[in-house]
Amino acid sequence: MFMVESRKMSDPGVQASIHKDVNTTLPRVYNYYTATRFRQVNLIDRLYPDTRSVELSHWAVPGGEGAWQEWSFEDVVQQNFEPTSLGEQFGPTWSTHWFKVNFQVPDEWAGSEVRLRWGSNSEAAVWSPDGSILQGLSTGDTGSLRTDFTITNSYEAGSPPYTLYIEMAANRLLGASPGDLIDPPDPEMRFTLSRAEISQLDSRIYKLTRDLEVLYQLAEQLMPDQRGYQALYTANQMVNSITAGDDSVASDLADQYLAKGNGERAHTLAAIGNCHIDSAWLWPYSETKRKVARSFSSQLKLMEDYPEHIFVASQAQQWSWCKQYFPELFTRIKSRVAEGRFLPVGSTWVEMDGNIPSGESFIRQYLHGQKFYQQELGITCKEFWLPDTFGYSAQIPALMKHVGLTRFLTQKLSWNTVNKFPHHSFLWEGIDGTTVLAHFPPGDSYSMSVTVTEALHTVNNLQDKGRAGTSAFLFGYGDGGGGPTQDMLERARRLKDTDGCPRMQMMNPDELFGRLEKDQHNLCRWVGELFLERHNGTYTTQADMKRLCRETEFKLRDAEFLLSQAVAVLGPAAASSLLQQSLLTLDGAWKKTMLNQFHDVLPGSGIAIIYPEATRLYQEAMTAAQDVFHNAANAIF
Image (cartoon, rainbow, N blue to C red):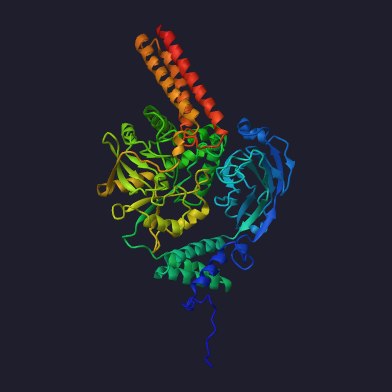
């Protein structure tokens, strides 16, 4: 017999046998860090060592869609909250429900991270007792979950009891359809309260789950390359070490593997956190206002623990809503803006349709967007950011140059049904010869989740290999908002510079385009329209929206023309009162018009309840324009 010295698997001198069957080892690693099965013997049951219940009470906001706007937080907390419990259902669709959450953290959790874990199968937001919105929650869409709120990273024994408030919206992140995503919403949908608890988080176990996740993805994507097999063996050895009780050895194994960096030739992904929020689509304008607050507050929360995190948000209208309805949040955001970490992007009032609005409407979109950013944030955007609309007019380069913009970003042409667009970084030439630098994120998405698959696809899919060394990698839940999550940022840290993957560097849009501009002499040229081979019904659907848009544009033009004539005839001094009042009226009318030019409202691709309100806004804008017209006419004649 051979005598073999017995050693623990955690001994760094012992290596797992390289004779591993991929079809069994990969599932072994996957099942060890996920909740799919074997919870009792994998890391999942160790992630939250202890959980306690909370005391819940509830109050429903009277009224339906948009009624929340009539209630301040100070008024809400004065209402009569009634006890409630798990299993209760709340609705109907678009209604609002408030929960008061009381709890005491046990002293034995001292030094641990403590989280509130929530499940209402809907969107929600966490509020402090003094009226600060702290973070959004999304618990109704399995592909875009944000279920936990960190109460403290290190609990101090003897701390007093906590009180938090949860504002629940009776809709999911992507609306309230009972079936297919874009089916009409169910107006009577109800949402079940399935979880409300506090939990002790073991941060060491959390790290191991993220380490194993990334190693699993690397192994899955890189094999049969040697680096992929090394990821598989490292992950398998980690499982062995954890099973033997040596978590720290497992953590070190992951760190050592991920520390092996890239060579100089590796492509760089400009990782930009964002949360493209449709101003209306599968939900009305009123719900978007809260989506903005939920999304923005979530990013502020992440910035506390991830100093590298850079977040961008488009559409000055949404920033304006934040200022109007959530002024305390807006003030906190401005401090991050000053740090260069929470940035406006895109320069326009909304992300409008790229074909139907008039040239003057385009100019007003830029004018009002940039004006808001300059006055409120001290920032002038340098790029036109329009990732999600149904094609792009050949006039856009000239319009951009007219307002001083030279950079353009979208990804929508990746949706083409027949022809694959031949470039990701290129020079776009308009009908008058004007040229701007254009970039399409090669990952074909503005809602990446930061996975190895996405990173490799971004590089492999790049149409302009060798022409530019940097590409955009836009990550964070989008359309319904939300933005990046902690898990995404953890994966980004591990993929920052690890052999086998492109470099992933947190970057703002100015840095991205600055790098592309250095390479633009290598880029190809595209002349004319950027036509989208999909969604062509948006040129005709909801025809009233198209008609009202054009009628409103005409009336605004006529009002401004006659107002300018009144000033010319009367003189600036005599017309000052008329001019001042008229400009305020026109400002409001233009903002209503521009809002309705959003790329799911004007094209007609939203749910039915959007359009009565859009019609009302157009009519109000036309009435305002007519008032200015008549006042100017009376002053002249």
